Image (cartoon, rainbow, N blue to C red; front, side, top):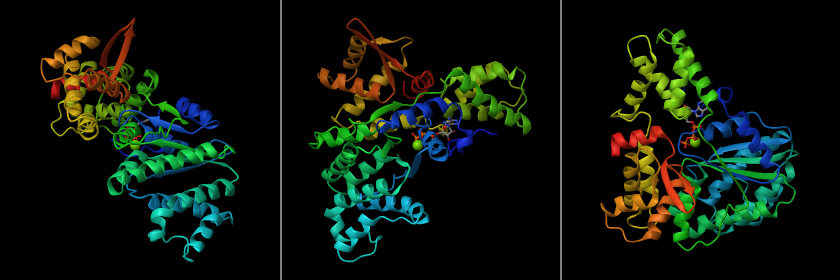
Amino acid sequence: MRPILGGNVPPERVVGRDAFIKGLWQSLENQSAVLVSERRIGKTSVLRKMANEPRDGWYPVYMVIEGVRSPAEFISRIVDAVSPILSRRKRNLARLQRFFDEIGGQPVGTWNLPELKDGWKKLLVSTLEDVRDNFDERVVFLWDELPLMVSNIKDDHEAKVAMELLDCLRDQRVADDSGKLRMVFTGSIGLHLVISELLHKGYRNDPTNDMETFSLEGLAPEHAQELALQGMQALVDDGDIKLAAPAEALAKEIAEGTDGLPFYINYTVDRLTEIGEPVEVPHVAQAIDSLILDPEDKAHFDHYAERIEAYYLYDERSDDLALLILKILSHAGQPMAEGQIWDDAVAQIELTSEVLFQKTLNLLVKDHYLVRTVRGSARSYAFKYRIVQRWWLKNRG
Ligand SMILES: Nc1ncnc2c1ncn2[C@@H]1O[C@H](COP(=O)(O)OP(=O)(O)OP(=O)(O)O)[C@@H](O)[C@H]1O
Ligand SMILES: [Mg+2]
């Protein structure tokens, strides 16, 4: 099984996520969930595996909704996803049909009616109630790229519409005491970044405070090694590489050098094909360096910087400040005290607001760039992943 470089991972090839998925299913018994992580850690892989291998008594509906740009379109996508299942079971979305009948006898499926511009809330509620009542199983919507949808809606309509959609979904979750309707939100950008923009525009609610947050991390060492071994084995079988060291020793080196991040494991294994001689342990570091220094940035490290430029917009200096903090920390060999980071930052840019500084540090922690350690009242920070720190040092340091 050759390494998959960024495409969808077939569910049976998702390595090392069984325990995480089990925990998520267990939690869904009681409440809905938000799945968060840095980019490319495997959120989509987890959701697709859940959709493919549902737990008994559940009906998962996986939907990628990044292109959705209005509430009506969102509802239409839900209807498209569930209708074929219901009609096979000789059930239908009766409330939804009634709604369309009321607004002018239109058949279900006419989504650009002017009435929907204002009437979408009622329509969303009807649809979700229909889903809940017509499935025998408990339904869990796995909404991938939901934050992008909310961001699109905010851009194309008023921010108010985006807020109301989040609120309406929350109301439905809270009102549902049957436990038959659950939602999982995830996406490549954090929902908190989009909500932070909405907060800026006067939003005061916390639309996911009824949901459990699940943070997806890199793979545990044994699973990281398993993924590396699988990939190397395929390349050996195909005659693309020869190994001059025991495969286990190489896999261990790959797992450690990539912090167990599956995306970089796959890329590192792939890079071994460029070594040009039988692979020894030091070649692994060489392969990782070639990824980090790749002028085309095939492993997409630049996402880490782009995301800040695009979403750290709560202050006109916030993106510059976040990038500077990361630059400062990329040079640090050990966790750095908050006061020291402040001193280094004020030496380089005009910075007077401690509030802004704190907020930016907090967000970098929340976004998985940094980890914070607290001893007594002293806080210090370091990059969460050494491979990202190395990229930052070499490319932005
Ligand atoms: N459990 C896994 N087993 C094997 N490969 C994985 C696994 N998780 C992630 N990968 C690798 O990482 C890549 C990205 O995975 P995935 O698309 O699931 O991540 P994501 O967190 O949804 O990314 P994004 O934040 O960009 O949406 C995959 O193409 C694959 O190379
Ligand atoms: Mg994804």
